[in-house]
Length: 137
Image 1 (cartoon, one colour):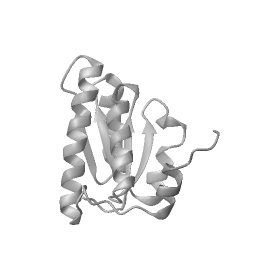
Image 2 (cartoon, one colour; image 1 turned 120 degrees about the vertical axis):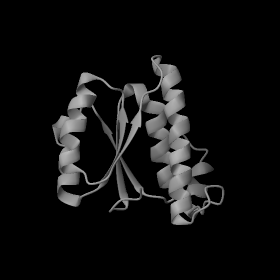
Image 3 (cartoon, helix red, strand yellow; image 1 turned 90 degrees about the horizontal axis):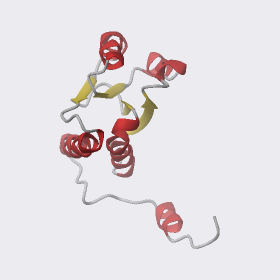
Image 4 (cartoon, helix red, strand yellow; image 1 turned 60 degrees about the horizontal axis):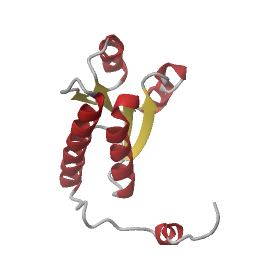
């Protein structure tokens, strides 16, 4: 499940934005992997070159659309390790909520495989400084 790289590319869209942001945030904050988020509707604009150069892993939110079916055909040629998270509900909001839950379980499994505890995250001093910032934006 962990794949061949410390980078996970995440391919989703507007209908999976909560789940995508959860994965990105948790992977980065807990130091599980380096997350790189791609929008599947803009992926053709060069984002695919990242894996071509570096051989990363992929998490793919599969909504079973015509585009997703096409992606599944061509992505397996480029990525050695693909985790596909499938749509379960017709309603986009309910489905995104469900996918966020599935993403939580995935991160829990990643952490377990890496011997990390998601409730004991080590933070850099920079986080505390940024978190307490009270100046103007």
